[in-house]
Length: 209
Image 1: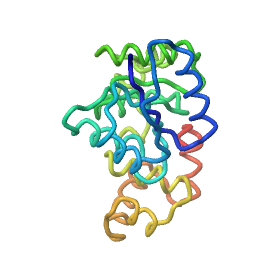
Image 2 (image 1 turned 90 degrees about the horizontal axis):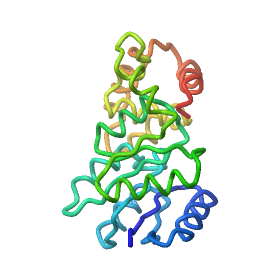
Image 3 (image 1 turned 180 degrees about the vertical axis):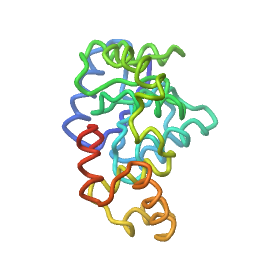
Image 4 (image 1 turned 60 degrees about the vertical axis):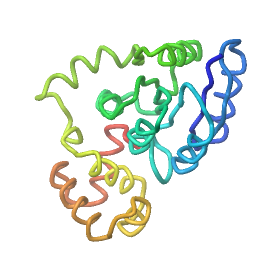
């Protein structure tokens, strides 16, 4: 039996995933979490084989949670479930330790296949994304500007795009406001945007929020 922990902050989506898993005879829901901090707490006491991880959770987001999960004594396989069918986002998740990347609009049967594959030690990439990753991520000329951001800058960028201010972000990431302001200045320079409105527009154009 493959034990799956569902980490997703939208209750309706989480319930839908749990119902889907319940239909499969070889899968069972071992637990659920609505945010990154809760997920890390549950993982310390709940053994599981696969974490189905939403990439855009409040607090510690999916990308930040991946290295922490990988650092556990017996880390489960991580299958990222994302709204973003974005090659760069998938590449980032795999780079920091995810075993697979599926999008929320993928076929339910494919999601079950993905869970089984990563549980068995394999890799899974959403088929619609796999081809694009080969071309977009591999060709430096074609890479979008947000591919230049460090993991920390990307975390700050994502939060700014969702409307958080510097102080909110400093609190969430346990860093000083000055450090966040430095990251903000760097990432705005890398993205070539002059204002927060431009930053939000960039994020929306690239389907990052």
